[in-house]
Amino acid sequence: MGERRRLHVHQESARLKITALPGEARPRERLRAAGPEALGTVELLAVLLGSGTRARGVVPIAEHLLSTFGSLPDLSQARFEEIDRVAGVGPAKAAALLAAFELGRRLQVPASTRQMIRTPQDAARLLVPLMRDLDREHFRTVLLTTRHEVLAVVPVAVGSLDSAPIHPREVFKEAVRRSAAAVIVAHNHPSGDPEPSGDDLAITERLRAAGRIVGIDVLDHVIIGHGTYVSLRERGLM
Image (cartoon, rainbow, N blue to C red; front, side, top):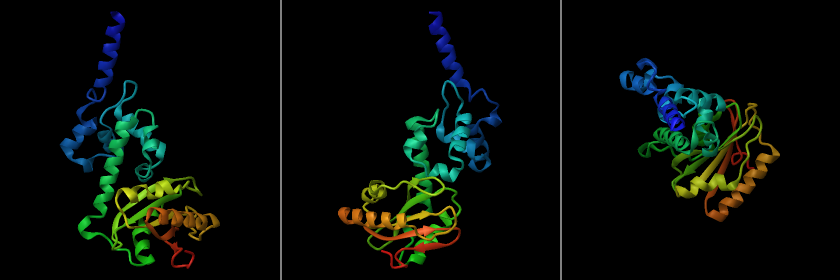
């Protein structure tokens, strides 16, 4: 009986950790009182996470989550499995974070003002600002309609300083789900030099072959450097 009482007290204590903080330190209360713009990044993440665990409050979990990925942009490009693995997060919180990031991305490309990609320069104008300052290699897919309007820019993989593991399944998963007619694939070179490597050319051919199987054209592969880019289509390499 005493053991059960101790367990109940421990659970109640953990549940009250966030509410026991002074009002000005509670992210949800601060958001309600001062608006979301008054909160720091960690506090906004804490609001999305909602609650902590028995061992750890929600703010320390948010701090740990941000430090694990290094920055908010890197966290926003992480996969479900990567976020889920972080201690104190779990599948429900990982899903809430991914949903929030995706909503933010969709706001950047409203359906009524979708950008149209007619040339490699159009693709570069879309991609260079998003990818030129990333400190690890990111691979993304631009999903296009039959008129080559941009449906979304979808993160596919985040790698190390010089590589990102790519599988055609991941490249085309969202394209198939959203009924895209064509895609442009893109990745950055953190070194700043966008010149394509032999591996870049090989993965491009592999993706084009996979695209033919699923009926989705790979129109271009754009490689982003520090404010510069190389289009394999423009170079005549695909």
